[in-house]
Length: 115
Image (cartoon, rainbow, N blue to C red; front, side):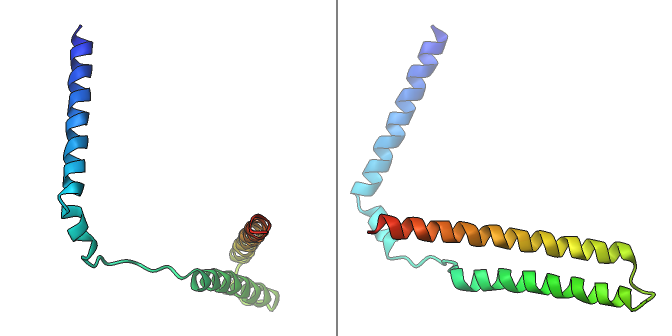
């Protein structure tokens, strides 16, 4: 019986909240907030994608420089550092390839659905 009373009380509270929120909208208070400018962070897809590609490119260049320095006998570059850089480069390139594949799939799906 106690569980039923608590459940009824909970349902009543939910209905009260719903009625207050609808009254809030009907009073026009919510409409007054629409004109207020809110800071909005714009995300530019092309610049984000370019940044990711540039990051992968930089990782690959760094791995190449370290590998070349190791091959030339630079005493400041050890094999562990070279192998880690090469693995980072490989993983980032594979991830970028997967993103590209997903983008191509999405593009094809959009093009097929709009026909």
